Picture (cartoon, rainbow, N blue to C red):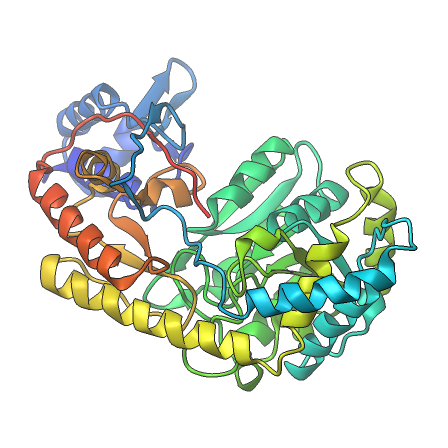
Length: 452
């Protein structure tokens, strides 16, 4: 029995979180029906590898070498293929929308240009889309922001402070974890199984036990797994939040990238079940173009009013011209989004085909939407693979970037936002990098990768 190897696997897969207190050696020996000598030797090896830390009088607990730090800077250059960013190019309809917005701008030049809530025409069109999808909304329930991350930070600042707990999925979006850390709040991970999805019973238990001030969920094409919560699951999750009286940030950044049809034909928004506890954020970055730098918050009128009042301490609104451009894009009858979905579907299929050819031992579930695959590797080697891939001219985000305390070393996120030929070449290089990675555990520096 290789106890040290078993514990290491649990840590690297994220199933044994950082800080978990280990039982005393005698208790472990009794529970596992092995000698204390074997337990002691295993703990010594784990301490030497940096996976376990001990202090006299305090016992032993799980540590994580490397963690989520950013010490190693990756190379850059024209030949570097960036698979760390899930950012598609601008949609073809952008230029006509810019031309139309230029004409509409004349009607706003007599104003002072400050719209803290956002232009009403844009808020009305965003509200219309929510209503079409099953969440009745009016313009006064929407505030325009400078992207979804800006929206997330605004809500986080209002509802959580230093020492407050924030419930998050594990794995989850790395920049949300960065924002929670910057607010000196404490992320509380709830495991999300790539095969079975959300564990509502586990979420209910976490809500009871940790009493978080706030929760953060991505119910539509979750980043990085691509999973989508069904209507029954949404209802159960909303009921759990209601019983705990815990408000939730619902991230719908990827909702329009439904590769099986129009999202209006899918499950109703989680916000439709969550009532006033649901604060939904969205963005044009994935659906239209990240260069617009526009997002929004959909919440009750009371919450929007509080967010508007708090916003004056941060900024005074979003650019008028970009809002006019997005308003034009949202009034095209869905043509731009239909094109984006068709294009993204082809790229998803190109990436899965490349993986089946060059990396047949990697496994994944083909997501029904979103922009990325969550690949399971044959060995816990994600960080080492990312380091090796950089040497082959590919930048990837290792699984540890998506974990609260690192781990997830059997997982790798691969976006499908680049042209098909670049995806094929990237996967070919990843296959070569994987072949160069030794199967034995090794200590490597954490990766400095910007993730979107």
